[in-house]
Length: 167
Image (cartoon, rainbow, N blue to C red; front, side):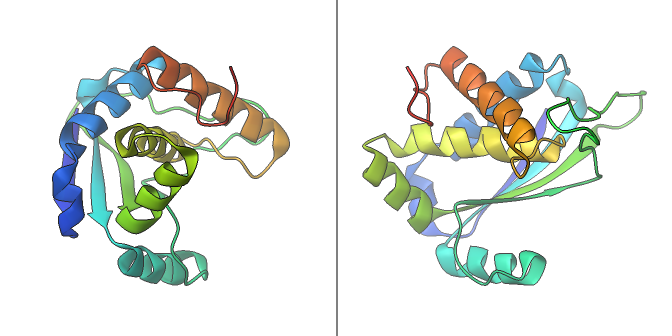
């Protein structure tokens, strides 16, 4: 597994983003039956201003958000609630899944509001972003149920409490 991490905002240096990203990506890929060593992603650790600009450029929503993701290809399921078309490695160089960006101020605020350590929230957002790269989404109710269920399961195996408030 190859994760290219770019830290653009100093407060991220106080979080072991490398270890969090590696653990989150390994747990997510393994849960889905994918071999982590054959995939690569990029992670941008930035501030709210940068993510607002990216959100404006790519989603026409020029406001901060906690996480954005850009999959390398469309893998989403056609039928609501079904698994997306997960990548299957055919040999050769690592397969690029896409890029994820996280915004410090939004992540820190949300973790404080939820009464959770920032590391737990960031781990959740990396799992969430990676699932988006793999074709999961939460626009349709059935897709959201599938994605949130996987997030909760993956995080529980990592010792991270349910981010959606379940038991």
